[in-house]
Image (cartoon, rainbow, N blue to C red; front, side, top):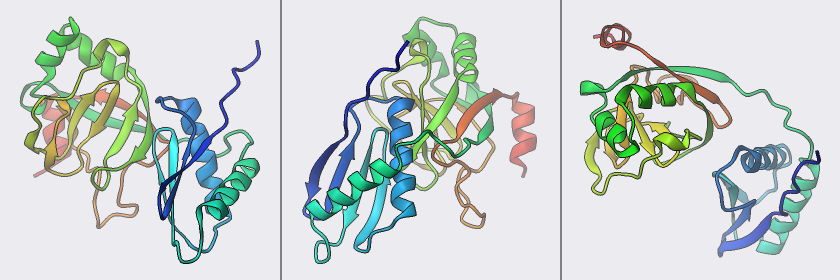
Length: 232
């Protein structure tokens, strides 16, 4: 059976100093593979005047200095990079295990997620821990990895009113996405558990535990194990 044909990318002026290269309007590993290939190609052949590359689920925002470049020049550079980076994915994807203590004081919304999904709390945990999630990109705050895709059976909307403070290490669900809050910040994702791992540490190299392209599995642990790993 032939592979489905992917649509050509759209190149759109996002501002007077940025160009958006979009591969589609959905979340999927096939589109994100194209994002990663283009990002590698652009990194391998930098163009003076490009100031930043911002990858997302299915696009890359290319920011540039308008005193040195214009949209046509950046678009031409991106198209050439696409042609160079059109081969199969070459770089290996890391496999990362994240221990999670689900429910109770560590996951205040687990029971509500179960109710909304018509499942038991145990079934929600099994579905979440049974999924292998890809890190699509990092954003929001340092170290926050947007991951997916969770099974549709546990997809939940964000909270109607975000919390003012979500503790660091909290594991949340939003739609079919999941993520771990690396810092104590406001947040509206539904919290189902907590990890003792530090997702962001400015004293560590690299500072962020997760990186774009990583494959992540969540491993359930009991409260005693959480306390031991978290330390004093």
